[in-house]
Length: 331
Length: 264
Image (cartoon, rainbow over all chains, first blue to last red; front, side):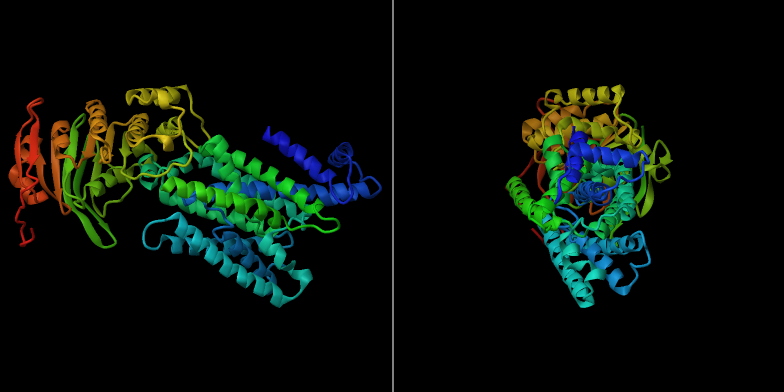
């Protein structure tokens, strides 16, 4: 059902925009192209195939990735208040990517590989920093974790803004807004393969560990008693979430709250078993971001909103709701 | 299966918390670990379910050093009920119990009919079959302990390791939980604060004090007024339980005992 909804949303995403195109026509253009036919004359092919299809697919890939990363991060820190944006990991990735561009290292990877690698390094560094801060003094309280994440995230995004503004070259740096709020406007066929591949691989790797992630929810000792190598699992989740975050941020910037909302919502409806949760969170994340991107492109005439603006407008209230539920339960 | 612990030493950050402990649990035996807070009971148990690695010494399962076994292989023989309590997000009772099948499952493998039957049997054994669909986090403390015990049963273990399973339970739930453990099909290693419960349940007791083993044997010979004074610092009389004939410890809650070193 979710898959059907996603397909419908993708169709709508390609059909809607500054120029509306009939859904039936969208599919005939797409099927022509998939069938290997030469591009049709006129602007429809350009709009559908060159602009909107890659963008809708990127939205789906990034949304799915954020859903996965959020789910994995929450299992890793055993805390439903975690997500790569809130924990500052996305900001770390942004800083890594921006630093690479400013230093000229990102230019080498024509397909976005160098940029992704730099973003991955930034994500890993930020995650490690937050982890150590939150770990100090033994326990791993939700409050401490989130505060450390927000603090480090703000710190890193300050550096990101500075670097972007200092470089001053709008063409080269894609702007502060892109890195700090996220945007899907950079979508092209050439840069699409990496996020799609990364998300597919991420789902596979995480799904293979779904049972162990369930055990981890019950505590380190319980997981050990069930034969799970907790140290290794943590390390694997750490790397997978940082890697995915790095790849996603490199193509779309730091998009807020999707990784927080989606797993929480899915858990409410579906329960906490990761074997079901992971694929459903991926689909739900994809659906959400495709829809949000349509809103971003069509809400204002002649100008588009960064996706992060809309996800923050939905996500921040969701965060407050979760916080209220959690703190209420803890009392 | 038989568990043997030989000259076990465990330390955290340079400080040794268990020093040279030897103990044995024969197949089908119920062996208790007692001792004051911080005496090292939990630490010893954690090395058996492999949450902690010994700094020296060995834990043997039927003569095989645990370190030579993969973690999942160990978990097919040894199931644990640790003390930790976590929120477990939104898992149902059935999902929590089905977790016991983890060590038998490859990645991507679903549960088969045999798994589901094992889970159902484990739930029935603790009297929680009717609660299978409920949220684990919505259960009372006593119900949760029973569900966690069912998870350990679902692991189909030869050895059961329990760390203070009756903590925070009211008297009735304590009695019910311990009754579930009086089954000699498995070897049981259990730490208990309640000495009367330990005396009634266990075939043999090991007393730990500051990381050292200070006494071992049947409850009747181990739990003497002298030992209770020395290890726990309490005055107590040991008599016979009028209903069961087990050793019964009656503490003197008024008495103040002079401890070594002049503390009172």
